[in-house]
Image 1 (cartoon, rainbow, N blue to C red):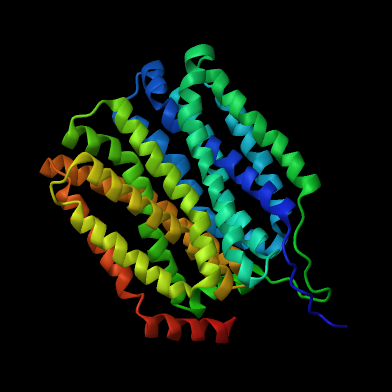
Image 2 (cartoon, one colour):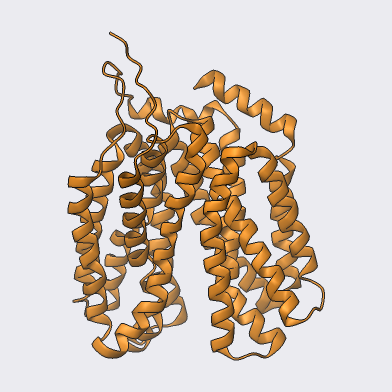
Length: 399
């Protein structure tokens, strides 16, 4: 019997459901951050305790992307995403009844798993689209990251009227609804009839098969880490350098966030039509040039323009990298995508801390910009065409 199957030409329903599920997960995953100020007062928390509360779901949601990606390759995105959504509902809902810092921390730990949702949709969506359409589809899926903005802007407004307890409960409801919607209306791409299910050890072998995986990890560590870093520090930077109001600084930063998020679609589209390695090189060079430029004294409008250009570059990079994962590792997209996603999550956790520490010790942002420039140079050093080509050939031979 023929074990091959024809590559599907796309599935809009699966793409839209995956994007919506991703947004719902990230809205909840990011909920502790906008509620931190209220929780700090309620439980009389130190800054360290608040930091631990914010870091716990972020770290778990990043690291756990690796096993979740493997599970998705093995059992399919429909089952894994549905179970993940249902699992996330319980700690989020229970957090609404929390009466102590410890109970909130436990809820945050378990809820951190919904941060792995990104690693579920990548393989499920990519398997429904041929190579020439995967980039655009994955770029659209990446827009689900906008769910974090829903939490950032919506949660404070709700707290003022109903209190933080009920905010947790309200944000848990979409998780429960989406779990059942995803189970009944999503589907996985068809697989060969006689294909032997891979074991976990089989899936993990891909990490030893090609150094190209670690190049992708470093690149996404850079682009997603920079996105999170500047999303967090741009308001402070604008207030310190240009003496503008917090409201204006927040509005300007919101534009940066939206530009970066929606540029993922452009990145995916470009990845479908231009060799991915060229895009990685151009994006790395562009970001490096911008970081050097930011050390100059320029006007507010010039600075904002440069930051927005950087946001678009970061979004393109974030969009194209998973197109390359699906292209170079079609049989292990979840496994490899989980590792790359974990690297990005760790970048989003550690780089803002490093920038903040350097800012505290030097009382300016220049050394921080120099540091991230070095990270960018390290990434760029692996983007040389012969290196990428050699790694790609090795990956193809193994997979």
